[in-house]
Length: 210
Ligand SMILES: [Zn+2]
Image (tube, rainbow, N blue to C red; front, side, top):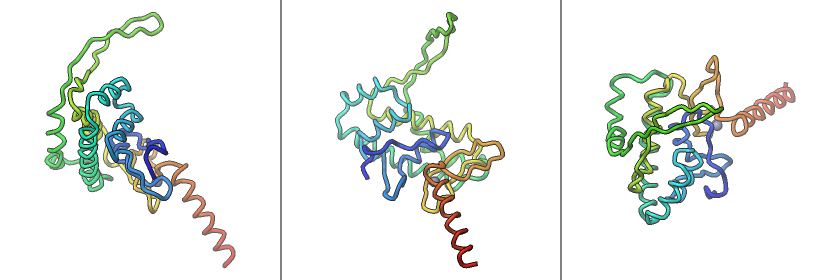
């Protein structure tokens, strides 16, 4: 199925994991939302990682070949990071895990940001805020908010509660922020209901044969 026909999935409760979920099988066909440059722009917009004005500027400034290339790098980053997360979910990260994050640090090193003091007014009260602005000078800069989200995931998320959905054919991951950490499904709509229906069918069958 084409990614243009279906909105991207944001059920992970952590942007870094939503990025991993940008390839998924929501019904029965795999969908990759970052299959080309246009897909990457669209996913970044849906994720709220890049302002729509910037996306428009990048569309005008970069060639589609450049955007396709950066989308390919995004997919490579995604699969590399998926491997990192899969191997470590369910337990706290350890000091030695940092070594494996070297490619991420190399990418973050290329980021160009500058701070800006901006005024915010709410209910007639003005406060100043320090905002981080990106320069968006090249197609590559589109990878930076993703790199930042991955960095935040490893810095701020307890990997003990990073989980894979228990749906038998589901590949979605999420951060379980529920009290008691009892979350098992990517979403009720996708896998939770499917599991309920399967359990119900099994019960009915057992009753029939019991
Ligand atoms: Zn699922």
